[in-house]
Each structure stands twice: as C-alpha cells, then as structure tokens.
Length: 73
Image (cartoon, rainbow, N blue to C red; front, top):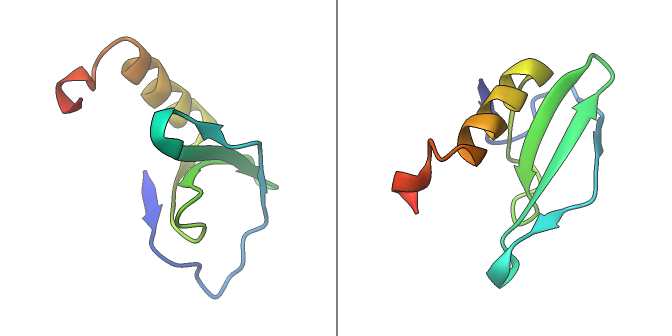
C-alpha cells in the first residue's frame, strides 16, 4: 500500500466519490484514477491519501468490516 503525504511532481487525477462521514464529522472519501488504482483519503487533508490496487483496498475494507481493526476502537 502506498501512502502519500503530498502530491508528487507527477500529478495524478483522482475521481473522488462523495465523502463518507461518521459521527463527529470524521469524513473519508474513496477514489479511482485513470490507471484503475484505488484511493482512500480524509477530507481534512486532501493531499494525503492511501493508494493501492482495487483488490487490495477491497480486502482491507472487508477485513475492517469483519472486525479485524476492532482493537483500535
């Protein structure tokens, strides 16, 4: 998984979907680029995001939904 703290000189055009906000306005958004890479980013830090293949991020989301990250809550 790639974590980007600031956009590199090679600009990536990401098509972001609507933000998903939970209680307390903690908002995240999901996006795709033209190459088919998937992105997860926070609306608080638009230039920071995690990117990987669609399959890898799908596996991450499935694991979180099944409780793999419950110990962090």
